Length: 284
Image 1 (cartoon, rainbow, N blue to C red):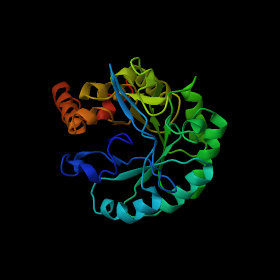
Image 2: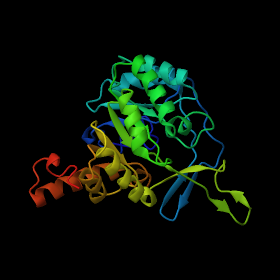
Image 3: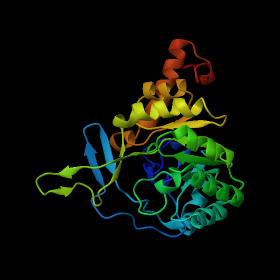
Protein backbone atom coordinates (compact mmCIF):
# COMPACT_ATOMS: atom_id res chain seq x y z
CA UNK A 1 0.00 0.00 0.00
CA UNK A 2 1.18 3.58 -0.42
CA UNK A 3 2.54 5.50 2.54
CA UNK A 4 0.36 8.42 3.57
CA UNK A 5 1.26 11.67 1.86
CA UNK A 6 2.85 10.02 -1.18
CA UNK A 7 -0.25 9.02 -3.16
CA UNK A 8 -2.67 11.91 -2.67
CA UNK A 9 -6.20 10.68 -2.13
CA UNK A 10 -5.60 7.79 -4.52
CA UNK A 11 -7.78 9.41 -7.18
CA UNK A 12 -4.81 11.23 -8.73
CA UNK A 13 -3.04 8.03 -9.75
CA UNK A 14 -5.90 6.02 -11.23
CA UNK A 15 -4.66 6.32 -14.81
CA UNK A 16 -1.03 5.53 -13.92
CA UNK A 17 -1.24 2.71 -11.38
CA UNK A 18 -3.40 -0.42 -11.28
CA UNK A 19 -4.74 0.50 -7.85
CA UNK A 20 -6.96 -2.58 -7.69
CA UNK A 21 -3.78 -4.66 -7.35
CA UNK A 22 -2.77 -2.92 -4.15
CA UNK A 23 -3.61 -4.21 -0.70
CA UNK A 24 -5.11 -0.85 0.23
CA UNK A 25 -4.92 2.87 -0.51
CA UNK A 26 -3.70 5.10 2.32
CA UNK A 27 -4.67 8.73 1.81
CA UNK A 28 -2.74 11.86 2.62
CA UNK A 29 -3.43 13.29 6.08
CA UNK A 30 -6.97 14.60 6.61
CA UNK A 31 -7.78 17.22 9.25
CA UNK A 32 -10.88 18.81 10.77
CA UNK A 33 -10.59 21.88 8.52
CA UNK A 34 -8.51 22.46 5.35
CA UNK A 35 -4.80 23.06 5.96
CA UNK A 36 -2.65 25.10 3.57
CA UNK A 37 0.59 23.37 4.54
CA UNK A 38 4.07 24.80 5.02
CA UNK A 39 5.82 27.53 3.02
CA UNK A 40 7.79 26.60 -0.08
CA UNK A 41 10.16 24.98 -0.81
CA UNK A 42 8.76 21.75 0.60
CA UNK A 43 10.97 19.06 -0.95
CA UNK A 44 14.71 18.54 -1.09
CA UNK A 45 16.43 15.49 -2.53
CA UNK A 46 19.22 14.10 -0.37
CA UNK A 47 22.06 11.70 -1.17
CA UNK A 48 19.95 8.71 -0.13
CA UNK A 49 16.39 9.89 0.02
CA UNK A 50 14.29 12.98 0.40
CA UNK A 51 13.44 15.69 2.93
CA UNK A 52 9.86 16.91 2.89
CA UNK A 53 8.03 19.64 4.69
CA UNK A 54 4.58 19.46 3.14
CA UNK A 55 2.83 20.25 6.42
CA UNK A 56 -0.21 18.04 5.82
CA UNK A 57 -1.86 20.26 3.20
CA UNK A 58 -5.35 18.88 2.61
CA UNK A 59 -8.95 19.76 1.79
CA UNK A 60 -10.34 18.93 5.24
CA UNK A 61 -12.66 16.14 6.29
CA UNK A 62 -15.82 17.76 4.90
CA UNK A 63 -14.16 18.16 1.51
CA UNK A 64 -13.10 14.52 1.63
CA UNK A 65 -16.63 13.38 2.47
CA UNK A 66 -18.07 15.43 -0.38
CA UNK A 67 -15.45 14.98 -3.11
CA UNK A 68 -13.50 11.78 -2.43
CA UNK A 69 -15.51 9.25 -0.41
CA UNK A 70 -18.19 8.73 -3.10
CA UNK A 71 -15.44 7.67 -5.56
CA UNK A 72 -13.78 5.41 -2.97
CA UNK A 73 -17.11 3.66 -2.38
CA UNK A 74 -17.01 2.44 -6.00
CA UNK A 75 -13.52 0.92 -5.73
CA UNK A 76 -12.72 -2.71 -5.01
CA UNK A 77 -9.59 -1.74 -3.04
CA UNK A 78 -10.06 -0.64 0.60
CA UNK A 79 -9.25 2.98 1.47
CA UNK A 80 -7.54 3.85 4.75
CA UNK A 81 -7.84 7.53 5.68
CA UNK A 82 -4.87 9.01 7.52
CA UNK A 83 -6.08 11.54 10.10
CA UNK A 84 -4.24 14.31 11.92
CA UNK A 85 -4.89 17.40 14.02
CA UNK A 86 -3.55 20.05 16.34
CA UNK A 87 -5.55 18.79 19.33
CA UNK A 88 -7.14 15.58 20.56
CA UNK A 89 -10.55 17.12 19.93
CA UNK A 90 -9.68 17.63 16.25
CA UNK A 91 -8.62 14.00 15.88
CA UNK A 92 -11.84 12.89 17.53
CA UNK A 93 -13.97 15.08 15.26
CA UNK A 94 -12.37 13.71 12.08
CA UNK A 95 -12.77 10.13 13.31
CA UNK A 96 -16.43 10.72 14.15
CA UNK A 97 -17.17 12.19 10.73
CA UNK A 98 -15.51 9.28 8.92
CA UNK A 99 -17.21 6.61 10.99
CA UNK A 100 -19.60 4.52 8.92
CA UNK A 101 -18.93 6.43 5.69
CA UNK A 102 -19.16 4.18 2.59
CA UNK A 103 -15.74 3.94 0.97
CA UNK A 104 -13.79 4.39 4.20
CA UNK A 105 -12.44 1.03 5.35
CA UNK A 106 -10.21 2.15 8.22
CA UNK A 107 -8.31 5.10 9.66
CA UNK A 108 -4.61 5.60 10.23
CA UNK A 109 -3.97 7.92 13.16
CA UNK A 110 -0.92 10.06 12.48
CA UNK A 111 0.80 10.82 15.78
CA UNK A 112 4.22 11.13 14.19
CA UNK A 113 4.42 13.91 11.59
CA UNK A 114 7.53 16.09 12.17
CA UNK A 115 6.33 18.80 9.78
CA UNK A 116 3.73 20.67 11.83
CA UNK A 117 4.20 23.11 14.69
CA UNK A 118 1.41 21.70 16.87
CA UNK A 119 0.10 18.16 17.09
CA UNK A 120 1.61 15.34 15.06
CA UNK A 121 4.96 14.41 16.51
CA UNK A 122 4.27 15.83 19.97
CA UNK A 123 1.51 13.26 20.40
CA UNK A 124 3.75 10.37 19.42
CA UNK A 125 6.79 10.80 21.65
CA UNK A 126 5.16 10.47 25.08
CA UNK A 127 3.45 7.13 25.81
CA UNK A 128 0.84 8.64 28.14
CA UNK A 129 -0.09 11.39 25.69
CA UNK A 130 -0.15 8.92 22.80
CA UNK A 131 -2.39 6.52 24.72
CA UNK A 132 -4.75 9.34 25.70
CA UNK A 133 -5.18 10.47 22.11
CA UNK A 134 -5.65 6.94 20.78
CA UNK A 135 -8.20 6.24 23.50
CA UNK A 136 -10.08 9.38 22.50
CA UNK A 137 -10.19 8.32 18.86
CA UNK A 138 -11.16 4.76 19.81
CA UNK A 139 -14.26 6.10 21.57
CA UNK A 140 -15.19 8.12 18.51
CA UNK A 141 -15.21 5.40 15.86
CA UNK A 142 -15.85 1.75 15.26
CA UNK A 143 -13.56 1.72 12.23
CA UNK A 144 -10.39 -0.39 12.35
CA UNK A 145 -7.67 1.90 13.70
CA UNK A 146 -4.02 1.87 12.67
CA UNK A 147 -1.65 4.13 14.61
CA UNK A 148 1.37 5.51 12.75
CA UNK A 149 4.36 5.72 15.07
CA UNK A 150 7.39 8.01 15.05
CA UNK A 151 11.00 6.80 14.85
CA UNK A 152 12.06 9.97 16.68
CA UNK A 153 11.90 8.32 20.11
CA UNK A 154 14.25 6.50 22.45
CA UNK A 155 12.25 3.24 22.58
CA UNK A 156 9.46 2.84 20.06
CA UNK A 157 8.25 -0.39 21.71
CA UNK A 158 7.13 1.59 24.78
CA UNK A 159 4.94 3.82 22.62
CA UNK A 160 3.68 0.79 20.70
CA UNK A 161 2.53 -1.03 23.81
CA UNK A 162 0.83 2.11 25.15
CA UNK A 163 -1.28 2.73 22.05
CA UNK A 164 -2.20 -0.94 21.67
CA UNK A 165 -3.46 -0.97 25.24
CA UNK A 166 -5.46 2.17 24.40
CA UNK A 167 -7.23 0.45 21.51
CA UNK A 168 -5.06 0.42 18.39
CA UNK A 169 -5.92 -2.48 16.07
CA UNK A 170 -2.65 -2.26 14.13
CA UNK A 171 0.51 -0.16 13.97
CA UNK A 172 2.43 1.48 11.14
CA UNK A 173 6.18 1.60 11.83
CA UNK A 174 7.40 4.19 11.10
CA UNK A 175 7.13 7.77 9.90
CA UNK A 176 10.01 9.98 8.76
CA UNK A 177 13.11 10.93 10.73
CA UNK A 178 13.67 14.61 11.46
CA UNK A 179 16.31 16.17 9.23
CA UNK A 180 17.74 19.45 8.00
CA UNK A 181 19.52 20.65 4.85
CA UNK A 182 21.37 23.97 4.40
CA UNK A 183 22.34 25.89 1.25
CA UNK A 184 25.85 27.15 2.00
CA UNK A 185 25.74 29.69 -0.85
CA UNK A 186 22.63 31.50 0.41
CA UNK A 187 23.22 30.48 4.05
CA UNK A 188 19.59 29.44 4.29
CA UNK A 189 17.71 26.24 4.98
CA UNK A 190 16.84 24.25 1.86
CA UNK A 191 13.23 23.91 3.03
CA UNK A 192 10.74 26.60 3.91
CA UNK A 193 11.13 25.68 7.57
CA UNK A 194 14.23 24.44 9.40
CA UNK A 195 13.10 20.84 9.93
CA UNK A 196 11.71 18.31 7.49
CA UNK A 197 11.03 14.60 7.42
CA UNK A 198 13.72 12.34 5.97
CA UNK A 199 12.46 9.36 3.97
CA UNK A 200 13.83 6.92 1.42
CA UNK A 201 16.70 4.40 1.44
CA UNK A 202 18.58 6.31 4.15
CA UNK A 203 16.05 5.37 6.83
CA UNK A 204 15.41 1.75 5.83
CA UNK A 205 17.82 0.12 8.34
CA UNK A 206 16.30 2.22 11.15
CA UNK A 207 12.73 1.37 10.16
CA UNK A 208 13.55 -2.32 9.69
CA UNK A 209 15.06 -2.52 13.17
CA UNK A 210 12.02 -0.80 14.67
CA UNK A 211 9.57 -3.10 12.88
CA UNK A 212 11.45 -6.11 14.21
CA UNK A 213 11.42 -4.69 17.75
CA UNK A 214 7.72 -3.78 17.71
CA UNK A 215 6.49 -6.91 15.92
CA UNK A 216 8.13 -9.07 18.57
CA UNK A 217 6.74 -7.07 21.49
CA UNK A 218 3.02 -6.64 20.67
CA UNK A 219 0.21 -8.88 19.40
CA UNK A 220 -1.40 -6.69 16.73
CA UNK A 221 -0.37 -6.49 13.05
CA UNK A 222 2.54 -4.21 12.20
CA UNK A 223 2.78 -2.42 8.86
CA UNK A 224 6.38 -1.78 7.82
CA UNK A 225 7.24 1.60 6.32
CA UNK A 226 10.53 3.33 5.58
CA UNK A 227 12.80 3.11 2.56
CA UNK A 228 11.01 0.25 0.83
CA UNK A 229 11.62 0.44 -2.92
CA UNK A 230 12.02 -3.16 -4.11
CA UNK A 231 10.56 -6.59 -3.50
CA UNK A 232 13.69 -7.53 -1.55
CA UNK A 233 13.18 -4.53 0.73
CA UNK A 234 9.57 -5.58 1.34
CA UNK A 235 10.57 -9.17 2.02
CA UNK A 236 13.09 -8.02 4.63
CA UNK A 237 10.29 -6.25 6.49
CA UNK A 238 8.00 -9.27 6.21
CA UNK A 239 10.73 -11.53 7.56
CA UNK A 240 11.19 -9.07 10.41
CA UNK A 241 7.51 -9.52 11.29
CA UNK A 242 5.56 -7.02 9.18
CA UNK A 243 2.04 -8.03 8.21
CA UNK A 244 2.10 -5.60 5.28
CA UNK A 245 4.28 -2.82 3.91
CA UNK A 246 3.91 0.74 2.69
CA UNK A 247 5.89 2.28 -0.16
CA UNK A 248 6.43 6.03 -0.19
CA UNK A 249 9.45 7.84 -1.61
CA UNK A 250 10.02 5.23 -4.31
CA UNK A 251 6.73 6.25 -5.93
CA UNK A 252 8.13 9.73 -6.57
CA UNK A 253 10.70 8.28 -8.97
CA UNK A 254 8.56 5.43 -10.35
CA UNK A 255 4.78 5.57 -10.11
CA UNK A 256 4.68 1.79 -10.67
CA UNK A 257 7.02 1.04 -7.75
CA UNK A 258 4.31 -0.63 -5.66
CA UNK A 259 3.16 -2.87 -8.49
CA UNK A 260 6.79 -3.82 -9.19
CA UNK A 261 7.20 -4.75 -5.52
CA UNK A 262 4.10 -6.96 -5.68
CA UNK A 263 5.32 -8.68 -8.84
CA UNK A 264 8.76 -9.17 -7.32
CA UNK A 265 7.32 -10.79 -4.20
CA UNK A 266 5.32 -13.15 -6.40
CA UNK A 267 8.45 -14.10 -8.34
CA UNK A 268 10.35 -14.74 -5.12
CA UNK A 269 7.58 -16.98 -3.79
CA UNK A 270 7.53 -19.06 -6.98
CA UNK A 271 11.31 -19.33 -7.03
CA UNK A 272 11.58 -20.31 -3.36
CA UNK A 273 8.50 -22.52 -3.21
CA UNK A 274 6.72 -20.25 -0.73
CA UNK A 275 2.95 -20.79 -0.91
CA UNK A 276 1.88 -18.24 1.71
CA UNK A 277 3.78 -15.24 3.08
CA UNK A 278 2.99 -16.46 6.60
CA UNK A 279 5.64 -19.13 5.98
CA UNK A 280 8.35 -16.45 6.10
CA UNK A 281 6.68 -13.72 8.14
CA UNK A 282 8.58 -13.06 11.37
CA UNK A 283 11.10 -15.84 10.77
CA UNK A 284 13.89 -13.68 12.17
